[in-house]
Length: 152
Image (cartoon, rainbow, N blue to C red):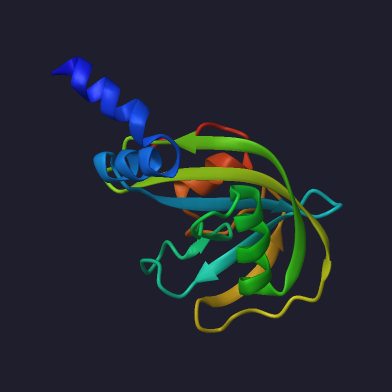
């Protein structure tokens, strides 16, 4: 039986192999977070409308779209939520083990734009010094800001 499967696998080659693999494996959403800093080292925090009361402050976050590079997700999400332009930097966090998602975080640098929040998702956007973060910051985001490994 194994030989037959191996032979069929070699016959279907290319795109058909990818379709079979896609059907046979788990599907995940990819949550992408940006640790956006300005020239003064301050970090951009957003007060998210749809996050739990008392824990609404956090970093710009969103889901990657199909075929999108994760660094590009940071750039897109920050622009959509704040109107600011950023450049994605190094990967600072990757966590799997969730049932339906993985989490990715990148450092990012402010490169321009004018702050204009998307009021549907965001209540407020402000720059904070890493040692003076507001109450209600997600603990995993606090750890990312401070260069620590987030604990979930």
